[in-house]
Structure formats: C-alpha cells, structure tokens
Image (cartoon, rainbow, N blue to C red; front, side, top):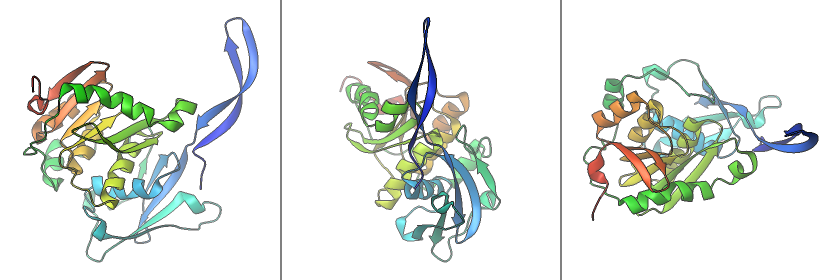
Length: 271
C-alpha cells in the first residue's frame, strides 16, 4: 500500500535563524481505476480507503447506487504499482454512462471540472433531495467543523489534506475521510455509505473542510444527501445547482456563524 504520509528534510526559516529539520508531507499517488478490466480513469489521491474511493466515484458518477451492483473490488498487479491500480467488477447489465465511456484524468486539484450542466445533474440523480424533510438546529450545525477537525488525524501531522464527513442531523459523525483532493475525500465517504448499504443518505449532512464547489454539490445530490456544509465559500454555480435540486447549502460555517445560501427551511431556527 502506498504511504499516507512521507518524511522529508527541509530547511526551516524562522526570522533570522536557519536550521534543518524533518517535515511530514501528505502522500499523493496516482490510482488507475478500471471497471470490469477496462481502464476508466486515473485520479491523484492520498493512499488509503481506496475501495471506498472507487465505490464512491462510481456512485457519484451515476454508475451504481447499491452494493448489490458491485461484485468485487481488487487491486491489480502491474509491475511495481500493485496498489495503484484497482479494478471494480460490476454485475452484468450495469453499464457506464456515455459521458464516462472514455479515459479521464482526474487531478487532486479539481476533479472532473465543467463536464455536467445543472440540467444533466438533475436528470442523472437517482434520489431527489428536494422532498427530504430533515431539519437541524443552528447549535448542531455549529458543532460540525470542530467534530470533523478532531477526526482529521493525518491533517494534524501534515496540514495538507482536505476532509469530508457524513453526519446525522443530530450531529453524530458517521464517517470521516481525508485526501489531497477534496472531491476524493467526498467520494471516500460516499463509497463508505454505499458499501454499508446507506445510500441514499436521507436525513444526512455532508461537511467539507474547504469550499463548496459545483462538483461537491453534485456529488452530495448524487448520493441523496440533502444538506451540504462547508467552512469556506460556495461557488455561484454550486448555489445555482443546490437551489435547482432543493439541496440546503451552507457556507462559511465557522464558530457560531454561517451563511445559508439555499434551503434555509431545513435550519430549525427557534425550534
């Protein structure tokens, strides 16, 4: 298995002093994803929870929606890259969408950017979130960033990873994952939910450590998650998509403040 972290000697500048010291870096390695033996895509990720990552990627791309559609996940030996090549075996009859029927390169920076319009996401979503009646109080909402931060074990030593967490509306953390790519971190928690038979995540809350992009909003919708919260800003297209789909979008969730961009009726102010 690739390393989640590595050690590197650095020259440390501190005011007028210069010294040498070891530093811990977050690992980043390519993962080639194959489906039924055919190469699909390559993503740059932090090794760890790779099965969740691939399952979540296939779920958020609309390929599968149930663990019953996934026969097996297995690493493939290919020279020295035994743990950087993973094949997903799907049940007969599960086909890849036409939009995925080509080789793709997914970087740790932005994932597969700009491919889907809002209309395309709406037509592909298996589980509409607009009718989800979940409500949560501001007090519970305020606790999510600190709870997620406490679960970021690798971030504590590297400072170089994004995180995503799945919560209940009562603030219970169900699953947290870290990765150099924010989209990978989300796919890892969605993959965990799929493999546990929890999709769609009705009544769930997805908390992310960075900004809320169009792609992360899309992934939340594809997993049937009605609430997406982020410590930083959403993009304009993320807000448009959330409004179109009836998803609650929260940004700048820090301390005891937040901006609710869409779906404010789910935040039970005064309850």
